[in-house]
Image (cartoon, rainbow, N blue to C red; front, side):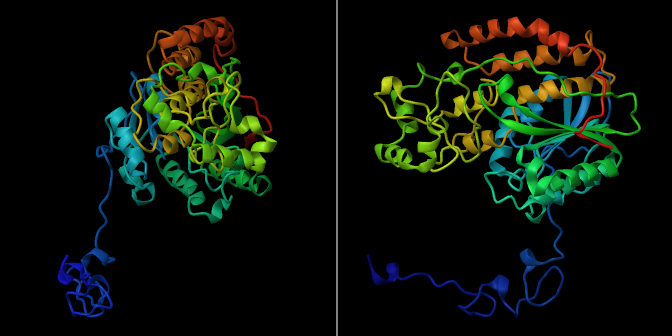
Length: 434
């Protein structure tokens, strides 16, 4: 190779010829947009920002007898949408900042979520019956720095308040990590509940563990908010049936081929490193799963061998442990077998998602009273039946696993329907903010 080809190209400013700075930083530059000196159009503060509304460019929302409307903030890959669509809802707006999550959302629902909610004027968001969202949890999570409202992500809750205080949806359903309850000695949660109350909503919350119906321990706080003028609406969190579902019921033990299994398996070096960790020695079942029990919480950092990952033990002790496959991770969260997963980022996306069957159970009695949908059976009485369908859809047909779950669900169907039948009465309790 000649010296000329080896020579590194020197970048510089095409305006003044300097090699110290680029054109965008040139003090001699004259902006063609505003006429001021010191910057060029892409950096001009007067340049109007492109508004990313995704597929939701029509801001005409409506209430219809055939469906209820909802707005999904911080949508991720659509965990809320799977549940609410199954309950007869229509999504009139969704917002998500992560481009990979937006791509997965579009692959599955055909709609592209709008971009950064902070950049979208309230007037561009359609009217809707229900506002839902799992606002970013990193600020409150035990796995993070817990900076709370001092973290920019913690302040994104204010976007919910901005939208709700103007559009005034009939109700809101919000989700976050359990760490929110204890953050700052409970003051952060108190501030959130008080703020929601101040814009005209009755509020109640509950800590719910997904393990009652899914093969995964996952405790999350759910906040239900009902507009104060709708006094006819009375809500109580539903009682969940308890189904003992082991990790084994969703594993691809017989269907993973050798090539796929090799990609998921730990190397000998990784395995030995994990064995030496103090956390592994203290909590071995949190690192190497007992498949006769539910899995630990699937987190967005899953796959990291240092922390927050639980591995499937090798067959007969002859193989090295392996990670969950993307499809197994989706089943842990209750996503249907037909859901299209991202080829690289599924652990992150699924770890950040809400489990659709849990949302379905919590939302059904609320929606049944919110809306005037004409159905043969009141929607609040159908919550468990629809949830049951979602649970079955998230289990493989092969190996008799779906049939086995179906039999287990039939045993609790009658009891669950009786528990959640009819109008839920609202009883003030310690989790209510007046």
